[in-house]
Length: 192
Image (cartoon, rainbow, N blue to C red; front, side, top):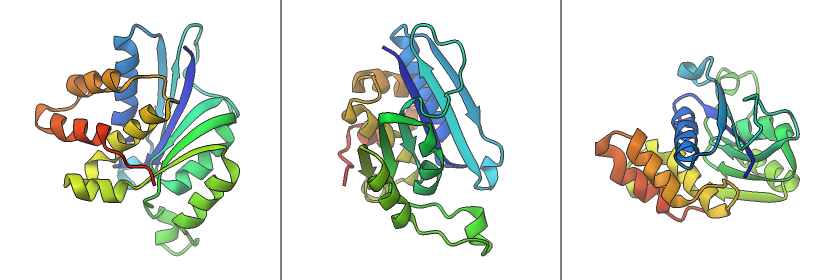
């Protein structure tokens, strides 16, 4: 199996933990893995993205434009920004819930998340849109978006890992008091 996966969002959404869960699950299966993260201004609501490459013969952690098999987007605008990395026929799993970019908050640009989701619909062959807000409300926490998106990626078949693989990674990497909630999030049906 070879997979090139990009995760993208803004600071505080759990992008880094999600990439570590994928890496842990792949390593537990004995798969070679390379990762790279850019977290720059994450604490201030800035862009966060991770490159994950799984499989034999992978030497560089960075994914070139047009080579990602899967983009997991925690925020619609950030997902649109990373779309040039998606290969022809690749898949996108995206949360419809917006996080207002800093530039829009200070009045420098307009931002409409629904326009971003529509752009993804128009330009992506294999798209899964996740209603993370509804699911977070049901589970009682907004901090489970990352695992909701991983669950949707597993269900799409595009992640290349089974739910059991990710469940074990959650048990390994998530503090005990949050494991049950994250396992529920992983199993939850959240597609539109």
